[in-house]
Length: 335
Image 1 (cartoon, rainbow, N blue to C red):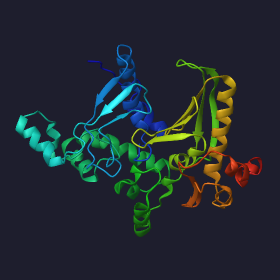
Image 2: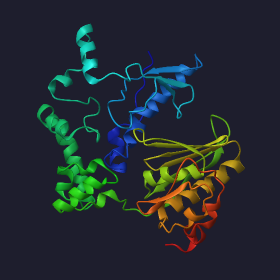
Image 3: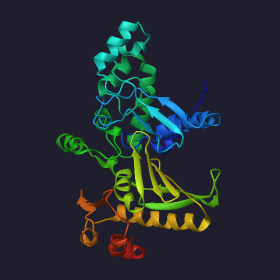
Image 4: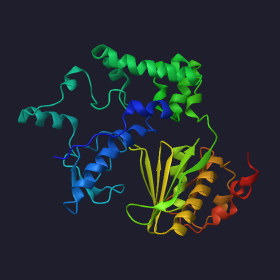
């Protein structure tokens, strides 16, 4: 058995990133994705495929309702995920456990439906309150951090009390709750202005070709995911906080933490792709929803929703919407 642990601890990073959220799971990258990838890469040194047995079930959530029996991991070449109990209901899982007299996590007997990180934003509010009874020290440490974070960002205690920290961008029902209770929802909008900074210039990549690394400030992962079909075929994992875009032999990876990595076959291609990605990010985050791009699209791949342009996977990447974009045309004049 290959054992790996996270190189960087959650508590080493939470001050920089803030609390994780349902739409901002930077913690998964640090605590789960990185060590899992290291273990898989080690496995692939001895076999062409690394098979991962996963217990996801389609009844767990809407996002998991359409999972296949098996699928290749688009983020980790060589990994094959299989889901042997994808069609099982919860009662069938428990009947099998009791029938086979299997061991299971005792937390399920203490009122927990989800067993994972105790401070996970996806956990039920009732489970978080249950944590306070069972492990007051763990609860106090996280609650103390949340209160300090709220005060630092000008948020009220009620913002934390009602669990609003669990979203980076509050959904409509939570915005309505804020309005009804007189709670400022300002944490749903980034305080910093949109900006892209190169943190590592064009350099050789271990996997071959060249890479460019950058950081993005003041960006929305949802807006980013909704526009990147212009660049190439996209795959988005909200759970991992990772968006990957494939363009011919090149790839773009954007993490919810704000990291951006462009990989391509040579320096010129990497530089060209980075500039294209930067322009699309700028267009997405400063879009006014004017609709000019919608009118010039020859395949009706663009819609205006929530006040900004969104591009479907029917995009043929002709570039007409980019050429017509007012934001890009006058980008140097925008503050």
